[in-house]
Length: 360
Image (cartoon, rainbow, N blue to C red):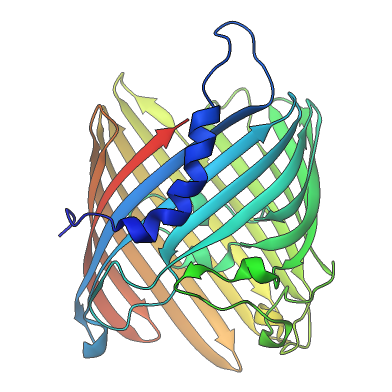
């Protein structure tokens, strides 16, 4: 089923945007860097998720869909740049078997950036720095739960200070609110613009939300990185208190012999006043282990989500086992097994993934 071709009509937004960038990114000189300079990556994935067993028979469905991401950097000088990221993916949840349906394209990042040696700054629409598991957890289903706390599509500004102390470290901070402009909608299948009346933590249309983080590594422990994060989101119209989030995470990649790399990771995140509601809480834990041997990769990830909302406690978990191979020409193929309990419903499923990326 993964060999179904991508529909040209659904890819118009991404490829139309990519084409002029690819044309103008041809090098002017092989020796001397010139500006403006345009670089980026076009990532194409085709995934098939099949839930073959569930306590809820209506959830036993097959979902075949693409995810296309175009990231572009327009560098005006060595330190000033304009950055875009456009995404094409399903913008509605699957309720029955579907193939390449409900696809919408949207601009999830657009920022003006300054990147100096010690100081960086940015403004626009971006993802504030809080948590890392939603970005680095291995496996096809490795981010099913922890993606809940990705602070995606926020409007605001921020910056970072880079320093050395037995390694390289960065302190970052940003202030923001959820995007309620026309950019919160999508083309193709419209997800509908976000409105202030929709509520939700961080949906305030003012700079009452912020995130602070410390990221770094240590010279004496090569391959290790850590993340400490704090987020404070203003209450939306349906909330009554600030949502406070605390994150601690890390990953460590080290070699076993010449050809084998082992990469464990873990992250714990706690939310007080979850969703902007006083006394509601949420706890997330992610642990993953990836093993790479030449072109092969195998991984396992465990995700836990414990919530107490309105006095009702819910314990969810997802277990992922993934095996993949990347051909020398860049095409990646992976297969995964998923076991989950969400909202007291047990399910099992299989996933297949084809991936390819083009740098320009």
